Length: 579
Image (cartoon, rainbow, N blue to C red):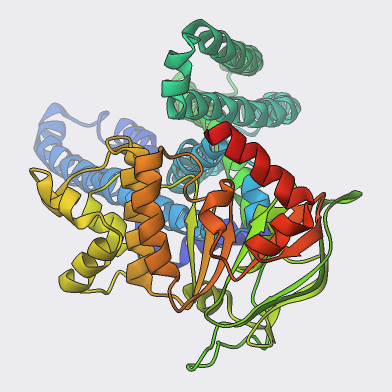
């Protein structure tokens, strides 16, 4: 019932357009029912008159029918054009709401769901949903109105034949209900299988450089063939069920025509009905059975559309893990930027702890570096500060305020992040830098690029800041992308900086340029650094060594070397490898 209310809510902004659409469809339906009655009236009243009388009235009959069908044509035009426009607007609204909800969902949702499947819900599913939203009410009104109207008219013509018609219709209804149950599950399976196809395509094309570098095109083709065949098998099942459904309905419609013809002929032979009345009755039966065919088509459309809408509702029903508290507030305007982790523990999944009782403090304007083996929990610590995930125990504070008590948007506005894997949007360099502060001026953007040591490179390009970067920035080197990401954070100008292994995948020359930009970025800001190369954190105010989710060592670079522990061992190994 909640799904139905949500579905109907999308009609509300267009209620007058929807009402007009239904009125026009009602006119189309009425004209369809009226023609056999007009023919019956003319047969009884006019066509048995003298030829002169018939010829006198025929132009008037033609004129009347012309007007009637002109009105029907105009109404049908409105249904086809503005009815589809209404459906397109509803599709836009649903896609807006779904995309908006995707933006609100937490990282945990994206950890568990594939981008290709989400794209399928935004496109394929919603197309079928809006086809149902547009055509569904029209077809129900048209088919339902004609079925009911013709049934009532048939009762007035001959009760016996109408009851025979009703009996066959009940058998048809039973057949429809039985097949509906099977079709509902198979169409949902279709949705899931095509979503997996989209996911496989997205995954393979996004990693096309890796595919080609390993010459693994055949591997990808086999993977795609598997999910493509699974979708084909699902479609095959749905078409077999549809074949049984449509075949059964055609058989029952043929049986209906035969039964009416035989029973009608019997009544004519007995003198219980006149031949021309039987002809009118048969005409209405044809109209009646045609609408049963329309309902068959609607049934298929309904199953597809409702299956898509069910998946749509499932996403909207998914609550984000990370939300604003009811009394959430903003950080004060005079924020210092002091960060503290107090006895923090965290686990992504139950029984799989990642962090254990982590406590440290970063005074405002100071730099703290995290070192340790991969998978030890360093990136998780960085993810807890902007609340990409919430702590399982303990607290994270900024200037003594628990981050869970702050508005998410304001919290994240005060934190700048530079990661190892830089994501650039498929636009130009200007748009990617301006993403840090969309309201910034051109001068501010250029100043941010200069601070990130990327302005001169940009100006050497033929299109300068208007140069397209390609999908995910593929037209730029790793160092160039990294400096654009740093410029983006410079433009944002936050008091707190998170550097998540920002130079670990770069060559020495690129690292030198970027380290210089990062040092400038960190100046007078509270900075938390995750370091893969220990040479980049010698000057940190404090270095914290994370081992198996807990703090194993802490101190300055010199102190940790003198201690001869984990940090000293990492440093020795890296120094030996760099020689």
